Length: 121
Image (cartoon, rainbow, N blue to C red; front, side):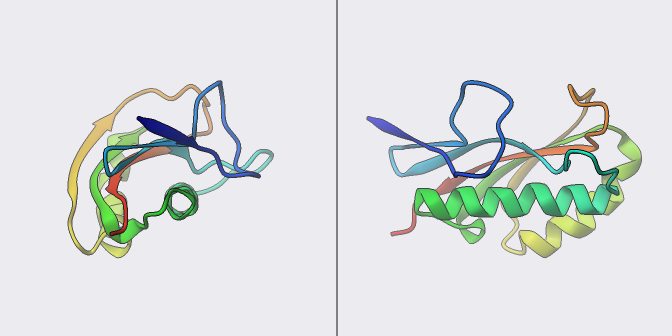
């Protein structure tokens, strides 16, 4: 059994859940840090994406401190050092991570982040 989790007010780009809770884990869909109508820096986008993930995790019964796996998608490898600095700030417990440099569907998107977390005991 699993349950989908959606957070009112958070945008989605398609017919999927913000997260799915299954077998004690929370699987969060990729989150962009873009804000419609604004040009944001990489740092602003990373912070926005992780803050959205925090809201989704809270709605699912978890938190950023319960994250066990992170995947970061970068629009350009030049953001890798900035991402590492910000990553340490949000994830001091050092979860497993994969970082991929790839194209983005939204040309203004510089980063997308998805996570897997455990549900709070």
